[in-house]
Amino acid sequence: MPVKTLIRSRTIDHWDAEDVAAWENGNGRIARRNLIWSIFAEHVGFSVWSIWSVMVLFMPQDVYHIDAAGKFYLVAVPTLIGSILRIPYTIAPARFGGRNWTVVSALLLLIPTVLTLWVMNHPETSYTTFMVIAALAGFGGGNFASSMTNINAFYPQRLKGWALGLNAGGGNIGVPLIQLVGLLVIAAIGNTAPEIVCAIYLVLIGAAALCAALFMDNLGNQRSNLGAMAESLRYKHSWVMSFLYIGTFGSFIGFSFAFGQVLQINFLAGGDTPAQASLHAAQIAFIGPLLGSISRPLGGKLSDRIGGGRVTLYTFVAMIFGAGILVAAGVLDDGMAGAATTGQMVAYVVGFILLFILSGIGNGSTYKMIPSIFEAKAQSHAEWSREEKMAWSRSMSGALIGFAGAIGALGGVFINVVLRASYVGEAKSATNAFWVFLAFYVICAFVTWFVFLRLQTSRASAGETIGRVAPVPA
Image 1: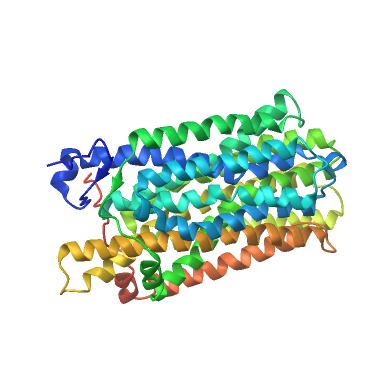
Image 2 (image 1 turned 180 degrees about the vertical axis):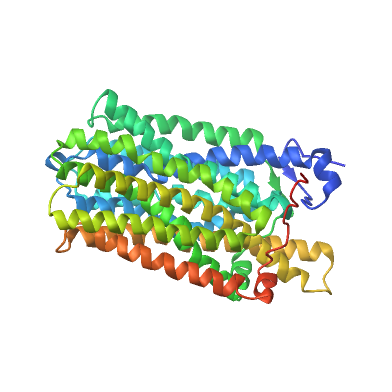
């Protein structure tokens, strides 16, 4: 029988995602409804989190008196704050209810959006104030952890890769969408009306909060707390997954925030005016995050079929190749000691977009691996009942999703800091940063193989076969 929802409180007292009969008789529809509105709220959160990757395109140096190095810090600080907030946001759905916290976390986005609208109309404001207001955009980064933890509790093991990939991918699309909104404003009016972008998102924030209140549910038997997070970190796999997530999600969010600036710097070096450089950068910048977001559910779906560890390994190997394209283009650019040629700019765009797509696939595969790892560990406790195994696995994976998300987001800070250091160095280009990224992906590929795939026992302890969907017969 399907679980009945209490209309007044919107709370489901007992939820068993692994009960196939209940799933087919109504629970699946309830889970999908919560997934849809969770995606919408998380989507808006990601947009607000990345709002400063758009605002810097509206900030010509002669008006705001902030150089390229200063702008890299403006887009890095929301990433840092968002990563820190993911720890408490992971616990919030179980403490306050998934529906309730989605409403609250959406309304919190009003704070950075209103303040961004105000400060962008006051270019004489101090750089410190800009940094503080940019930091508040980190509220949007926290939304990811609470949304993923909540949806993880709604879905069975056999569908987690797809559901979590879809939830994360739909949220990630908030990054290219706000960049697309910025492009439309710049194309229609120029780089002088950033308040229009902010006004649009004030409306979307209100819609996200209202829809969450009307259509989402709380789960009464959801459990996640700091104790669960501390327990999950006793296992080596938890630390390894957090490290690998720096390479997947850290790449996605870091490149999403920095891609537009890298393009703008190259267009300015090529002779564009600031307004032209902003427009040309905005025309391209949203494509990478869009494709990276779309590819994320694909990573989850592939992992449901062949195992998250294998997909993650193949992804990092391909990312080495993508970073190699950037290195080659950068070396040629540095050798010419001038503005990038058309061919080199094409190589930059191709390399970055390939990395975006692959980071999206890797995001989906790593979030398939996390619940599989703890399901495998739960099955090793023969003395536990089925309900105890399910509750422990869900609690541990939910806690680690938040922690890994926090550590992974720090990768975005790392990318922007490395790019800034590369641009202000003697070479004044991004080539040194590209070498760092390539080396890191080599390490990630080796770690994935060594820990999860090297031996049959490694594959078993990582739950590579758990929840795998059987292929459809030909």
